[in-house]
Length: 81
Image 1 (cartoon, rainbow, N blue to C red):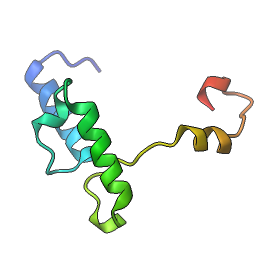
Image 2: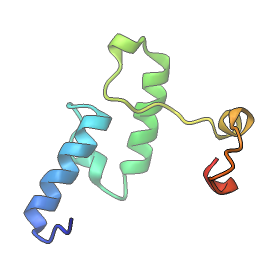
Image 3: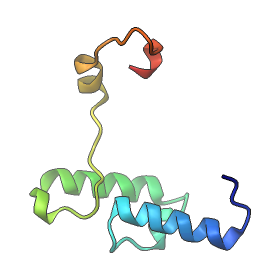
């Protein structure tokens, strides 16, 4: 699917990102200059909150734990495991 209409793309990005970040997230969460910090802060706040109090679905990703718990799958390249 190729989306070429700027308004359609903008609406789609806002809806998808808003769902993951949480409905209360403003346009600042899509600003490239601020998004990383805001998304990280939201993930850390969610990690500290009870599941029912979380906003959106962002949680920190522990790379070391993922590497420790990963399993080699013969049909997948090592980079994907």
